Image 1: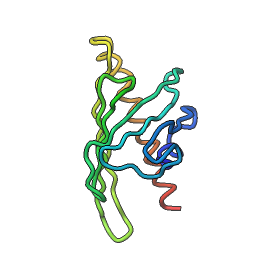
Image 2: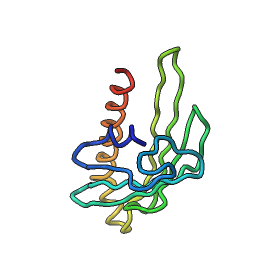
Image 3: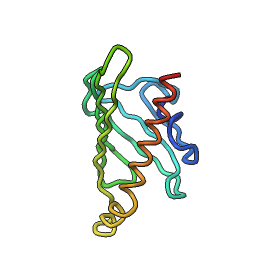
Length: 131
């Protein structure tokens, strides 16, 4: 979880506020939950996710339990490409709240915002792991 907060956009001021290992916990496993606090679109908000699938070292899936979205599922898949090379594939499914207004926001704002968020995070993660 420490890697997560160190690799996201700085302007979000993201931090862990609750996790099974305390706020400094490094690992999370099946059935465990974590709550992050961050600022998105100038609003300070919290998101609680639960690990609902866990097959180390190949994949894990977390699902929003509480937060700004109507629903959100994030699948993290790891594929070994060679002795020192691994591919991470992120698949994010989410639905915005507020009916048709949320669907418009998702289409015109949230899809690109979340894509950019994940791409930035993954680039930072790659840099950290390769250094």
